[in-house]
Length: 174
Image (tube, rainbow, N blue to C red; front, top):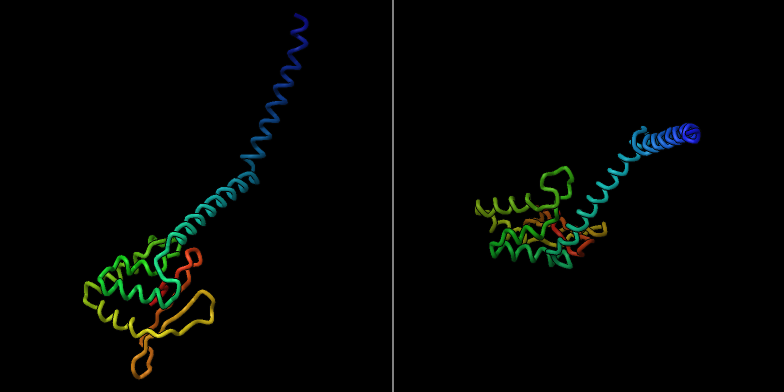
């Protein structure tokens, strides 16, 4: 019995010590302001890493287009002549504005081409694109075409960008 009475204070002290160490561990790793900032930083890092992987995967899978700007333009014109709007839209860049509901899609390009097709303006667009002449670019990975009237006046242009993930040229603006 005497042994039990002497053991109780040691057990209570050990329990209190373990509880204090556990409380300190929980505070330090989960509840303190510094721990909260660290956890938030880890969550944000995971979100950014996931978003970057999604972006890179989409860019690698975006293989429609030519190995040269001229080849991509020719492929676009051919698809438009065949009336294949879905294929024609695939030669455009993906929308990369993160907060846009069309993120990593070509919805705006496809809708624009469908509208031109439904209003009968697609033939006019094809005619203009067939007049496009290389204008080049001083920036690596970018290329432009100019569409000029017979008088030399600029009517429009086509901007291209190299998708470095799939090594294909994509139409960026028109």
